[in-house]
Image (cartoon, rainbow, N blue to C red; front, side, top):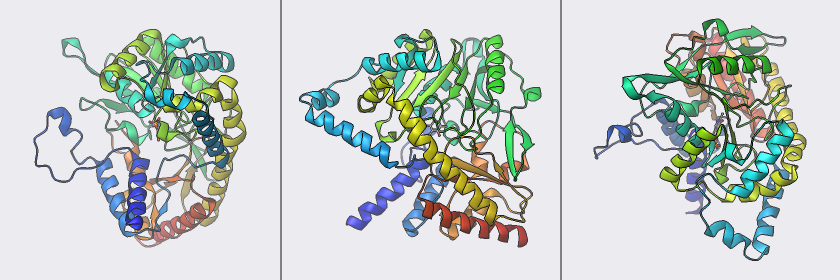
Length: 446
Ligand code: PLP
């Protein structure tokens, strides 16, 4: 009984690492068009189904496929202590669990956050510019469907990803079909078999059919950090078209600061910055943060009121002191950032060692918690590589899932894998060794 429970937990955990839902195989009920969107076998649901089965038959699977943040001891000690203090402080725990927050979210937390963003990032924001959500995944559901989809007069607008690969979790968020469009990047080769994607501004056409531009920075899955210049240029383009630029800052500045390169945060009235407490170490708190102009914040608060009544309250309470004292910046800078940076460095050199002599490239890891491996000209595709790795007990995510909105054919999307390095050093090392063997075999035996 105990074993089964532990095993099921592992499977649920692994699935939740990819997105946060569950595939349906056989339907006996009729659902609405909206409902049917959540039942059909999209690529990502098939992948999750497959992962679930793989994990239930192979208990020692090396999980290099997820997006879960690492369990960093210093961070966990802090939140345990905070929870203990809450329990020992008469009435505090009861207030924390016993009240709904307002639809905008915990006002004390929002005030402290606005102060911190003003002081630390120089953003001209007040509490009226911040709304909390139940995780940034839901922030994106709200924003994409608010700014894209069908408009009065039968017009349709899309959300533009100016550079793919992009976050897999965006792919199925549109209520309307065809919500996304995307542009492929320019590839810049660097030393030591590293490369960097750059926004291809020459092919970036923004017209009335675009409702917003969205980019993750640092980028999941590539670890790219678009430069300040690129970001400012995107912001200018958005502004001149009268549409917002959405920056997905789940891994970014000022927290959790999983950035290994020089970059500055950007916000203005026309920019929507989405943040989260998840990658700080609180994914269970389900707390997303949106920083935007007042009008957007009001609509988002209304959406929360209608869909959730209020965002979750525990995440903001657990993080309140960290934000109010500014300790969140110290924790991010002194603990979280170096933790991931050293893991990234180690994973890159392990990969470089194991793939010597092969036509491989690694995206320069500038942030986030993944390595993006490009196997130039590999004779099999990323799905087959994924299958072969799974057989050898290693789970990664095949790269072709990370191109939401890109319609054109591009062989490159079949040549990449996303590898997560947030697991223990031992697991990452064993996993990368097997990746090396499988990739070598793929080049030599077609
Ligand atoms: N954005 C990016 C780039 C992510 O990688 C993730 C989670 O993996 C999210 C958003 C969603 O995070 P959450 O809903 O936990 O805040």
